[in-house]
Image (cartoon, rainbow, N blue to C red; front, side, top):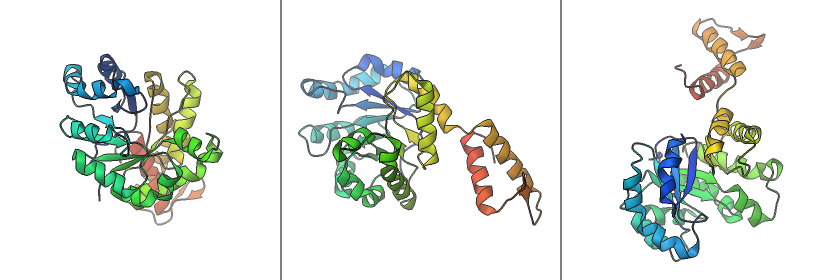
Amino acid sequence: MASRLPAFTLPLFVPGDRPERFAKAAAAGPDAIIVDLEDAVATDNKVAAREGLAGALAEANLGALPVLLRVNSIDVEWAEDDLATASKLPLAGIILPKAQTADDILAASQASSLPVIALVESAWGLRNIFEIAEAADRIAFGSIDFAADLNIGHTREALLFARSQIALASRCSEKPAPIDGVTTDIKDAAVITSDSRYAMELGFGGKLLIHPAQIAPAREGFMPTEAEIDWAARVLEAAASGAAAIKVNGAMVDAPVIIKARQIYLRAGKEV
């Protein structure tokens, strides 16, 4: 099943009970915004935040920018009303936190009539990642909650297996490349760029952002370097020559190498 979601790389979270920030978040230049009714909203504010969403979104006038809603997890008291409200809003989709089974995804999809991004944040979610990927429109990785659930470090080494499984499941289900979890540092641009590039190299197609300052460095991380673009140009030029045996920089070029060159060109926004 193909994804019904619009394409985006860098969605930015904004608290659902801070409607004055919706337009500001959109103006910062993300590819989408995520209005958050879960972690960013205190228990006492959840109902008011939900009930004020329709008016807040209309007032923010976000235009064509995709708007996603992170509802509360399917097993808590606010979930049913969150999903019913989502079904009446001009949303591109919902983000379902703590997704653990395909049934969770199907229930959220049926209740909201919207595409579902499954936020995998637990050992059980990873255990069922292939069935979740089949049911969802896209996968996102809740890396911080996942690390806490397993009592492991929030490090590249500790999370490598989980990230690799999520990328593999997304590819096997022919869904868009998954969205990586957040970088908690909002000031160190080099760290944000490095984390984004690492995620891209593992097969991720986006990253969850928590502050507007993360947008530019994260975008840089998902862009190919000038050296990569130059290499891709050489490969594609050589491939277009029609020669039977192709070499670029002393290395043989075959079909997988040409595919890689095309992928780099597409990430750079260039025509192939």
